[in-house]
Image (spheres, rainbow, N blue to C red):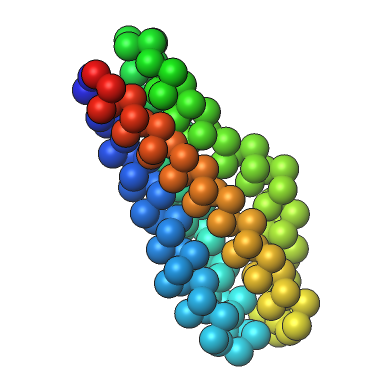
Length: 144
């Protein structure tokens, strides 16, 4: 049961960080001018990606461990939801990330702003996956 509770904790951390980006950081950065927006997005993304990727991997491993120990399908659902942001990011968000990362600050403008707005919408899927994982892990933990 310990791995299940730890999986729930990690999923909640992942989800909380993702929600913060969607409801606080992204709206705040969109109030900046185009150059400042891109200047803020670049290091913020790098730091956030490292944190969320690590949490997703740890949550997946803990969820799979809990499922292996307990066989509750909620742990399996949660584990899959925890790792799902990896392919989502690599297949869907990465082209946007790459375009933004390759944009020089003196080239910031309406195109980079549009990409940051698109990035925020795509990031919301990661938030939803984290919430799904948290709810699945909570269900599995409460069912025991």
